[in-house]
Length: 116
Length: 112
Image 1 (cartoon, rainbow over the protein chains, first blue to last red):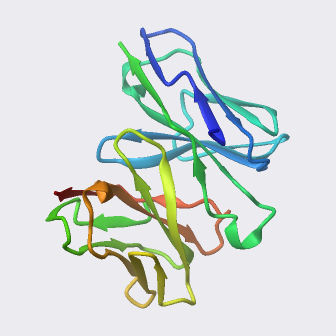
Image 2 (image 1 turned 120 degrees about the vertical axis):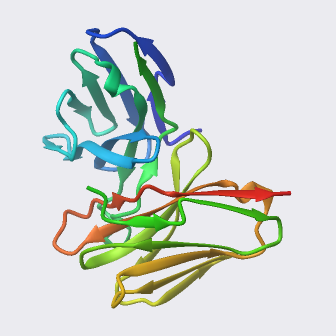
Image 3 (image 1 turned 180 degrees about the vertical axis):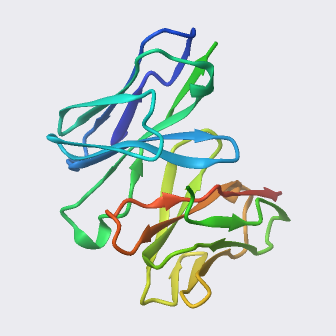
């Protein structure tokens, strides 16, 4: 069973549509992250959350919003999708309960989003 | 902006050869990690090396860290076709919030 799951896995949408990407985890980790990956640019941090009541902007938060519905769920929304948001989106978690491993991130399988 | 930069961007070798990829970074770090990504899949953590460590091993992987040169290397010995993937370094900057910053990655192809 996957520890970090993402839905949908693939999505094609049109400019101006609202899109929600969902992430769930069964690892019991408090920390959750959303990244986007573009060819040749590596991973860039969009938003992160250290617990249910904590939400923080990352490097590229413009055009995105998030919701931390529970410890296990962290959703990413594109309120009005645009073509340059076409990318591979990853959710990740990390465990702050183990200080020596707080940096280690566990990734979901990714959502491939295409905005036409 | 990316903290770590991997070199080379792409590497193509034959099965059985060793693969070496490098990561350079700009600011002081607490630790450095290496991750692997199979095509279109999520990243998988390989190894973490702390700023006070110089070398770590895990199976066929050897990671070195030179904080004076702000660089790290990942060596995969006796490579296999299954090692074909992209490899990313991720740095945790000193005074940061324990969130790693990822480089752009090295694409490794191992030919059978």
